Amino acid sequence: MSKVIAIMSMSLDGYVADLNDGVSEVFDWYFKSGDVEFHGGGADPMTFKVSRPSAEHLRGLWTELGAALTGRRTFDKAHGWDGNHAWGPAFVLTHQVPAGWPRPNSNVHFVTDGIESAVKQAKAAAGGKSVGVHGADTIQQLLNAGLLDEIHVDITALLLGSGVRLFDHLAGTPAVLGNPTVIAGVGVTHLRYPVRKA
Image (cartoon, rainbow, N blue to C red; front, side, top):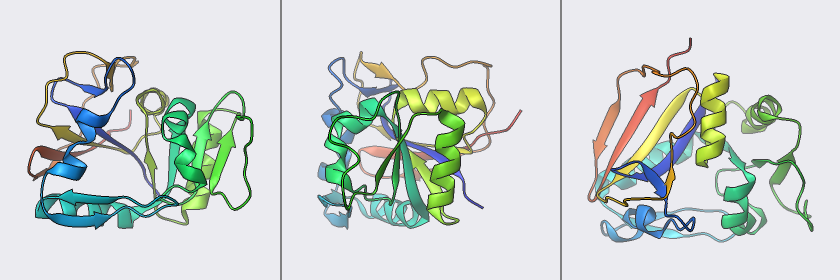
């Protein structure tokens, strides 16, 4: 059964980006934490250099994914992944489709009729695999709507001090999560929590 999984890198003090939406510090572990290469795929493929435990973790996670769901802010910051997201079809939650989109031969789709519709479309496109979710605001909306199955957070060995928090605007807290799976990498700890449904 297809799951909806939040996937974010975060500083130890809870930030996923700095005050200018910069993410280089929280993503450094992808490029500087080891000598094992992991190829990201997509239209503009990246090669990550991570520790062996992180590489094994990423291989398992990325094999599980069949689609992506994100918000417009993340889409804009990622320059639309050059039209093809590495996880498969990408569904962008937005109020308005950006100029020049949709593009031919692109796997990026835009959803203007709400979070429930976005989840439904992404799950259908995932073909039984899971849907990976980017973006703090989108993750918060999914949590608040009871539509998120798991939270996967890569905690980096970093105190950012300020910026964009992953869990800023939550309703129905406290929310108790299930027991985590923990994988220790170099410069990063991979945590995966099941979300308990109300």
